[in-house]
Length: 307
Image 1 (cartoon, rainbow, N blue to C red):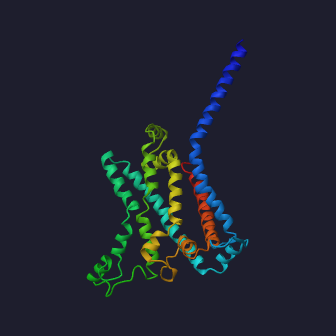
Image 2: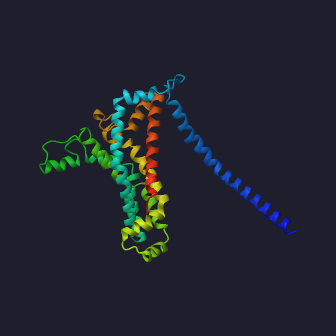
Image 3: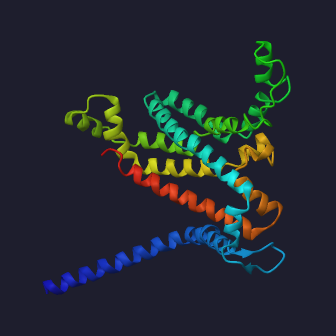
């Protein structure tokens, strides 16, 4: 009798677990369908189209690796775009990421009211629609631009500098604007992660021999917010390699001598202007591979945090 009762209880629990799993699947189904249709499927189609000659109006013609060969062997603008994208990413990615983390760490020490105000002030540039307008006004190429007017008033220059069309200044200005706008959703994730750490971990840490705030940051704070660190890294990688709107808004499209041309600008050119969708898909696939590869490297680096 006891064995039969135990079997009945196991069967009952098993059926309950199955029902719960089915309920979970039902709740996840809408999101999974949307994710499949609008994310996975477009990526797969783009990869397939990258091996074709497709101009929207005709049936795609399979040309195997020709698009990729043209990109790396015959397309000087693409090589320039890759170089510019990596330069921007090398500066804005790591610097913006660590700046977001440090600012979040400092702000976390403030009182709740002041913290809320500071978070708003730091986050505002990343969502401000008039951000580009401010920088265009500051670095306007005539004597009425704020930077030119100040430099001329101080007799540092005799005539206005063409900040946004001179190839010597365009890329540094884009990097400056990107850094100014880098405190975005990753910064908010860091603030939330710091707020969610149990205070008892710090007490245990000091008992175990932690002597200063930097050791506390490395051995206690960062290991307890790895999900937020990973999310911030993904957002930073996406923003730094996906730069395109900033360059077009500040330097025009195309920029002078392609000095601020990025992979996204090249993709925009072939995808939405020339309608060479096969070629554009090859550009998008290369950018996707770069982002995934960088994400893997960052993930391995973050796994060593706190060790």
